[in-house]
Amino acid sequence: MTSIYQHFRKDEKEFIDSVLEWREFVENSYSPKVTGFLDPRQQYILSAIMGKNADIKLSFYPDSDDLERKRCILYPDYYEPSQSDFAVTLFEINYPKKFVTLEHRQILGSLMSIGLKREKFGDILINGDKVQLLTASEIADFVEMNFSEVGRTKVTMEKQPLEYLITSSEEWQDIAATASSLRLDVVLSALYNISRQKVQTLIAGGVVKVNWRVVENPSFEVGEGDVFSMRGHGRSKLISIEGRTKKDKFRITAGVLK
Image (cartoon, rainbow, N blue to C red; front, side, top):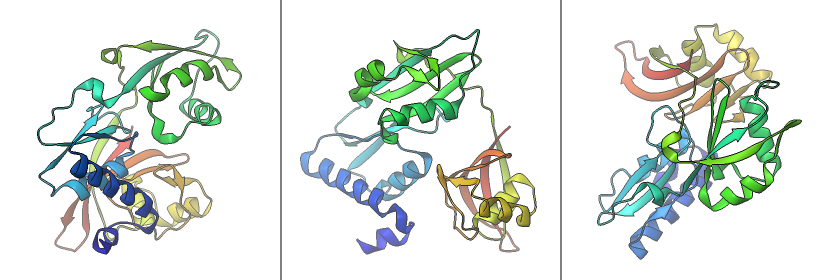
């Protein structure tokens, strides 16, 4: 069992333990298991651990590449999951559009302030003045009753059919890059085309996040599925590590918000 942990970070042990419990549940009960909303790194870890298990399959929802956070069903090979099995509810957030603009960080902060755990809701989607939110269906009624303000703006929640899901106006651009190592400062320097020294200054200033957590160590080793944000420079994500160049640099594929 120890060998599994060696492939991942120490602070990911708790999530890996959860994955192993989900696997054991499906194997022993021969019935499906639905997870909370997983970020891209968690999706990568889950897929990596389960990848060689032919008896248990994985399905993610929403299945769009444009969305980051997804629920997963682990299920035995006899089972065929349907959309309703993922237990996802879509809300449209109604607010006085003529007078205010809602921002992602404001909505996120307000959701956390009513006591929601991050795994209970998915992406916050903004396109023009239309704002939507995906939640776990088991907390949908709670959200509908208790999520009534974003900052000082009064809002109401309106359930919508899942086929009304909008596409965020955020545009990701796929890029190919090379990096001499998988250190955080080296990778971000390559992705944003700015000096490593400047990246190190930003990291030391506490304005760089990896998977929504502040990381102040420039030598932090990044991995597939990691999502980065750097104040003043936007967001990016490490999609895949493709191997090495002839000069022994890492070839990486990443997404950067335009």
